[in-house]
Length: 464
Figure 1 (cartoon, rainbow, N blue to C red):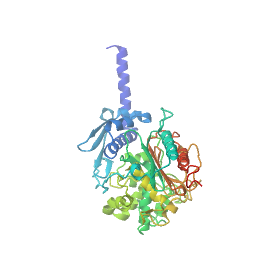
Figure 2 (cartoon, rainbow, N blue to C red):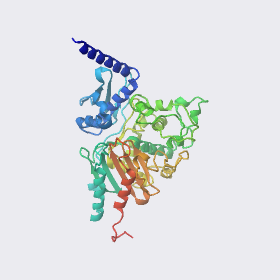
Figure 3 (cartoon, helix red, strand yellow):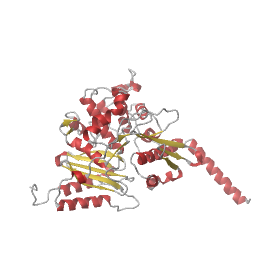
Figure 4 (cartoon, rainbow, N blue to C red):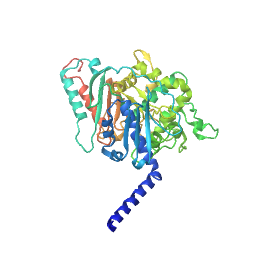
C-alpha cells in the first residue's frame, strides 16, 4: 500500500466520520426533515394521487432537490408503505397509507390514529360534462392562454403547470392537464388547505359552536396567567395571534418544516410557541396558526365527530368527492398543508365562496362569512390578507403586478397552487403545479389573460 493511497483512504475515512458526526449530531434535524419529506411525499403521491412510483421518485430528486438522491426509497404496495433510508443506515423513515385517511409519517412509540372518515367517491364531472358551448373566437383565445400556461421558457427553472380549470358562470369552460395527470388525479394544495380550515371554522361559527371574538380553548394555554389564553378565533384566522413561528421554507430547519416532517403532534408543537406580540397587533403568515385551529376544532367536536366532519359538513354537500384531508400522527388534520383534491374539486371550493357560501340553494357557510373572509386583516400593513385567504397575490407569484378586479381573492399554496375567485366576473380559476422557483409563475398575469379571453367577443350578444 503506497503512502499516497494511505493518505487518500485516511482522508476519505475522516470525511466519512465527519459526515456521520454531522448527520447524527448537528445535522440530525436536517436529515429528519429530508427523510420525512421524501417518505411522506412519495407515499401520498403514490397512494393518494395514484401516480407511478418511478415518476414520483424522479420528481423528488430533481431541480433543487437533487440531494435527496442520496436517500434511497422503496414502495411496498402490500402494506401501502413508503420507506426511505439515509446513507449507511443512519436513519430510516416510513410513511403509511390508511384507507380514506391519506398518508402519515410513522414515529416510534406513537400509536396509529383512528383513520379519518373520508370515503372516496367517483371523480367530479369534467369540462366535457359541464362546459356550455363557447364561441369559436373565445375558445381560440382560451386555448392560447392554456398553451402559454403549460409552456416552458426556461428549462433550468421550469414552471411545471400540472392542471388548469377555468369556471365561468358556474360552468367549466376550459381545462387542461400535464402528461401523467388527469381530471381524476387528486393533487396537493399545500396552503390552500388553510382556506378549507376557514370553511370548517365558518360552519362551526354558523352552528354556534365557535365564536370569532371568543378566546379559543387550547390545553397548553389554560393557566390563568398565560397571555396566550387571550388569542381568539379571529386572531388565528387573520394570522394575527402574535405567536412565534418561523415559516421560511428555504432554510434547512424551520418551524414549518419541523412541524410537518419531524413532529408527531403538529398542533401541540405550534401551540407551545411563545407569544412575541399582543394578539391582534402583529400580522405574520404562519402555518402554525392553522395547525392550532385544526386542534381547536378537534377539541370542540370530539374525536368521533371530528373524523367525519370535513366530509359531512363540507366535501359531500358541494360534491368534493376526491378530497382527502390528511392527518398528523395523532389524528389531527394537518390543515395547514396536506390536502389532496382534483382540480375540478378545488374549483368547487372556489365556486362555493363565489356563491357566498350557498350551494344548490342550501347555505353551507353562514351568512356574512365570505365577506368576513375577504375583509383585510387589521394587523396586515397593506391589507393583502383576509381570514385564511389572500386578497392580493403573494409577491412571489405576482411579478407583473397585472391589475385584477378589486373583489378578487385567492386560496394560495406552496409551489404555485391557486384558486382565484372573482365574484364580479363570476369566474373561478384553478392552477396547480410544481413550481419550485420563485418568480417563474406569474398568477397575476395568468388571471389577467384569462379574464381578457373570457370577455365577450365584440359584436356578439351580451358584448355591450
